[in-house]
Image (cartoon, rainbow, N blue to C red):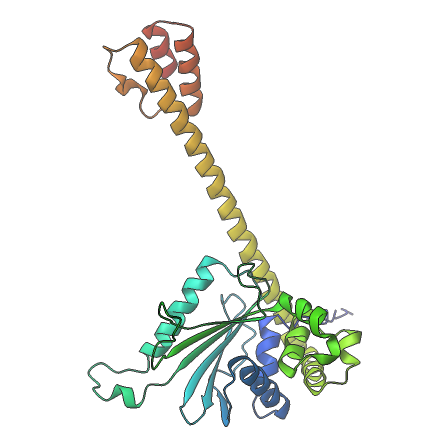
Length: 311
């Protein structure tokens, strides 16, 4: 009889399947409370009504690059907020992608030829949780919006972006103490560290609800297995990026060495054989340039050089 092995329990809230599960089902009062706490704590928007536009959880979409949670917040102004959990360093590509993403969200609100679009357009917020610290901006919540040289925010601004640097919560704890954290700070602490003995001992409503949602997630073996596989996929993608960058660096170093060897060889060749066409020294290998350079230093004749080249 085959014994079924249960998948290992998930404990990391930074796993985007867990994150979306925790916030997407607004029929669950805990999800509603946690989502409202996060949005209001980060953006200062007072949420009258929340609607998750993509609440479905599909464990089969393991290879998706990003799992985004799109939220419609109903306020007097009618604001659209997008939330994404991404467990990675904040790279140049992520900076670009989120600016493009915010611009697309605004563009989708406007129909071509609609002269009354300003009556319906609403603000866009993008929120990115980062498992890293920006050493140029030592903040827990870093907010970006267009400003002029006098530091005035653009009038009628439509796009605001927030970076939440999860590891920086430890600096906040050192300054304030764990017992004095706000609701949003407690949520960020739990997102970063998970359910620890010290945080659960506070008996915080935020932490209790996050723990209950994590326990509920782990009761679904299909979701647990999907979360484990998805994490492996993301690790694989990260390792591939590191390998590609490393190979690029190595290739760049090789090209630099080749160019340097070619330049010094041509310089010496032109000096010793000013009447010869130096085109024969084009498109050689690094080894050939080094050998020819040594040959030139030894005052060998042109025949020896051509022999190295194979001519």
